[in-house]
Image 1 (cartoon, rainbow, N blue to C red):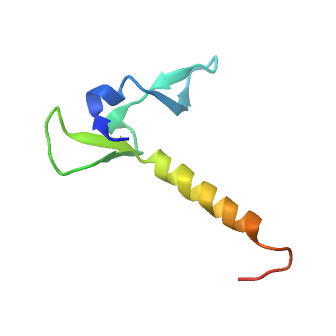
Image 2 (cartoon, rainbow, N blue to C red; image 1 turned 180 degrees about the vertical axis):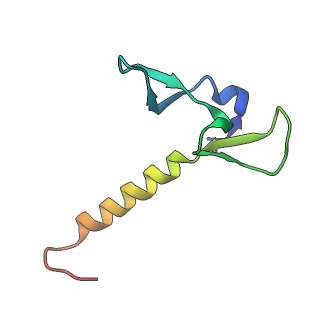
Amino acid sequence: MQLCESDAKFKYCPLLKTRDDKLKFCQGSMCMFWRWATAATGSDAEGFCGAAGVALAAALHHADDAAKRPGEDD
């Protein structure tokens, strides 16, 4: 989901937690996972959480591994 950084800062991040396991808000461009959607700059420039792509890639990789039969090689 693409949104302005100012809007993203009100979304919870599943990777950031407090000491008592409460979720923290998105850090926007201060996070290593934040990706800009376009080269535009300004307060209305949109971006997205790059962690979503990492999680999707990991899930697809796991699904591929689970689908292989025992003893099957690449």
